[in-house]
Image (tube, rainbow, N blue to C red; front, side, top):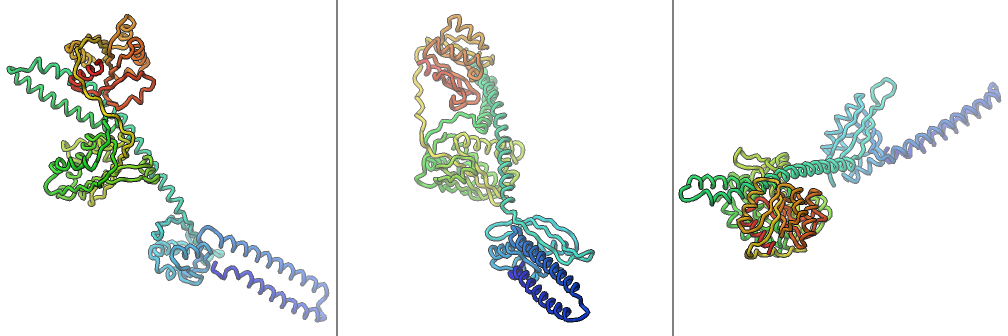
Length: 567
């Protein structure tokens, strides 16, 4: 309805009053004629009264209909077959004025009124023509424009009169922008949740495999370390060479397992307050040597950065991995830039990154290489996923970086556009409560102590027993918890309990640790873990005198740890 639409009922009422006046004049004339009876005059008056009531009722219904349409939330247009606007409601006028700065009027042609809006015009004209041909049209469309992209649901219905062709088309346009955006946000949240659940499941799987494999590697390394001096010598060069091959491949396997533990966030970390600008500066020579001469490396880390509490060696490894990935993405050369600045993360940013609001170091590694399609970038942090040819990559570089950053309380985000390069964002929390320095290793005291060893893996039990026995300790080795408990009940009082971390996960294992602590006050338990967890936070309720050593380890490191504890 145009701005004069609300005047139509008043005009119609005036017309009715004029008609009633003329009818009254006609009635007076008829009354003066001799052949009109008084009864006819009464009937004529009743007809006029009924006519007036019907007119009033029609006017009221028309006014109500106009008010309803005019105040509807939908944008309503009535369009004639010649594309002229027969009516436009108040909502549509306000929408046009707010978004486009003008308002179509009744009598304007649709194509002329929308000439300055090519996108809506190209979308609407075919749909209106279909409705004018007799078809009911329902479509969802999107129009670009200030202040942002808007979404509408269009319902265009032909208006018929009997069986004739449509007299006009009635267009209802509902603004569904907020609903559409909310649906998109919901889809993104669901996709992020599915990805998080997927990565969590993969992390649990890889962490479990790595744990078991680390235990096996511990036995292999220990056996090699004990066997090598006994079998290798000046006359056994071939045996020495074979041992070297075994050690080399076992070390590669241990490195692979360490990357899996990094992804699953179960590696050993030694966090301390770290100055990233100094760390990057110290690494520049190493990073440059890992790149080609046609790649320019630029350090843009800011000065006066907050310290971040991370394991510096792991961060160095992560930066090296990112730079090597960037090098491979720039086969024709390019620029690699390392940025870092302080960031006060807002609640909105924190929600998007699934972090707590607060202070972070924002570290970026950016290249102008080939970039990645969206489907590749989405899977880039999955372990063993790689686009490189067979033998040229394990697919664990980004997954290791992701796991390390998450385990350190931060987040990693990947931006990549095919042909425009890649930027890897690392968000590392600012250091606040710093951990105390690690105690220094002390010289070995004279061994005169008793050790209770509980290990169900025969190879590991044999290696550790041999090592500690050769060092002069009295080793009591058992393959089961029940036998170790029986030995305690018979009077064994060890100075140290050595066993697998699995002891803390079973009722009998906890009983063994608690009984040993009760019978020998001050006795420490040294638990071996393939997870290499950083703390005992997941093992509540155990005595406090428990320490952890990560497998695989050098036998020298185990011996030093045992000596330090018993001292």
